[in-house]
Image 1: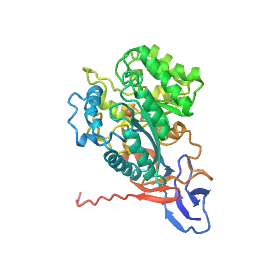
Image 2 (image 1 turned 45 degrees about the horizontal axis):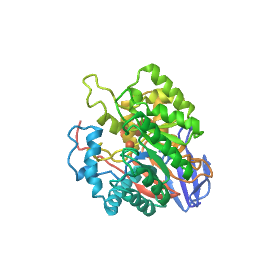
Image 3 (image 1 turned 120 degrees about the horizontal axis):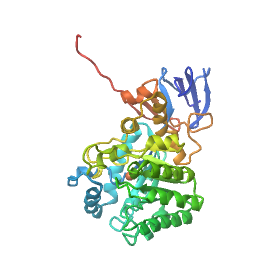
Image 4 (image 1 turned 30 degrees about the horizontal axis):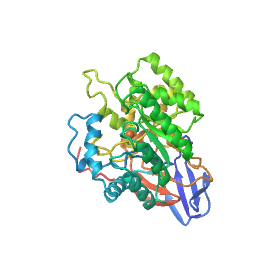
Length: 414
Ligand code: FE2
């Protein structure tokens, strides 16, 4: 065997296991593997999990807060405005550099599968997609990168975008994005959704939309998207991201929409880091939390994951390091998840729930699956979040691609 990980603590498992890897795949999981591996890692009872998945990250915009003017109002609208200026000056090299820096951080934190939304509009045209395709090439073999062609400026509001979306799909984008709330009228929002489905069907692609990222309780595009998904028989292939307005609805309408989301088999992604910062800016106290109804969606049996979303851009200018344990800790606070089973769910949201969004079958710690694993410097998922534990070994296809070990030395008597 190429690699044997000894004494690994798997989730939901009594005692530890040895994990044997050959040709990048897990070939044996046993209490004790008697033979020697080419390489051996003694996990010493540490938590060993499948790789993290970040299903929502804007790599084309990441880190631009280092070079643009600050977002003084802190709102989504001003964030988009500032980006217009920067987008006009985008170069492939600039985007590749920023995206690569962020991927390096993410990989160090144990994420080797990413879905990134990349702007497609008449300002930046296809430059961001071309840049991310270049990044995808450079990182092939290191991480899996799925590209969503994202009409950030709307489709009807920004004539020419529909054709650019088709071109983005032709040159290699994987998923059709959308932002139906960013249109002038409800009829245009509906048309926006219809266009996204037309393109997705042309290319046999899945759909991943920014939906109702607003505190406005009259936003209705989640309902429209769910209804369209049912009509088109696209259950399981559509993801709705942000859906902040769901939290602003009254409980009766929210329950109706959650029922539709369930029937449509929509996947949901919440991004509490950004939305805690952006939403409710115009509220007086008590301020809304700004994130979607995470617990209610989970309780309805809907697949929910979380993502970093923004990272030092105009939307979320100051923080973020593409660490799922950090985003998970923020999610726990924002969604008030604190019970032991809720913390397990929180970990699922950064792992298996993301795999369901990407419709990955080859995922998880099971014999026959690709060995994409993290050995985390703790024994339980709760402690992993609490201590933001080191990812001691990040393993991709059986190769160690990152190692971290943080040490503190105390020089005190008490
Ligand atoms: Fe987003």
